[in-house]
Amino acid sequence: MQGADLATLYVGPDHSASIYRNCLLMVAKSDPLPETVQHLPRWIARLKKANDGPIGFMVVLRPENPIPSEEVRNTIKRLFKIFSESMSFAAFAVEKEGFTAAAQRSVLNMIMLAARPPFTMKVFATVEEASAWIASKHGSEVKLTAPDLIDVVDRLTKAYVADTLVAGG
Image 1: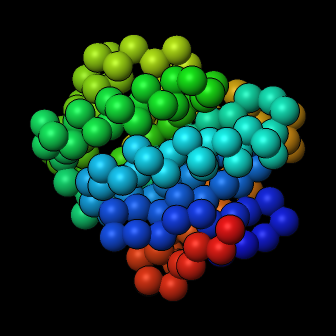
Image 2: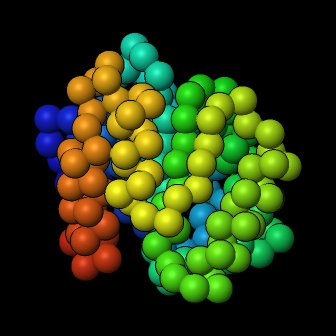
């Protein structure tokens, strides 16, 4: 999916990664593959090149995304270390309900405490909440509004789930 401010960089069995204005948007169906650690610096470099101000990321954890195993938690910690070098903010939207949602949010908060990232990071129950927070804190410089971000994430998620999302840049 491509557009004036949108570029999809990666579509894999684990997640998709796209850039929209000052955000790296990742929609996750399953645990991140270890190769993600190798891709991330290139994605961040592209995001930094396109933005003078603060940059960050949003991860949308789909309902089918499992609670991370210990091995996956280590991969996530390595990703946070890479993110720590450049990011100003991060939001996680856990698209689950009930006990599994609470467990996933708890694990994410635990990983964040252990990783001690030097940027603001929050876990949300919905994309709407995450988008509102990002837009209010870090959207003004790039004219990013919550409705815009919600719409882009919704289109990316629908295309990814339908297996029609294609990386193009």
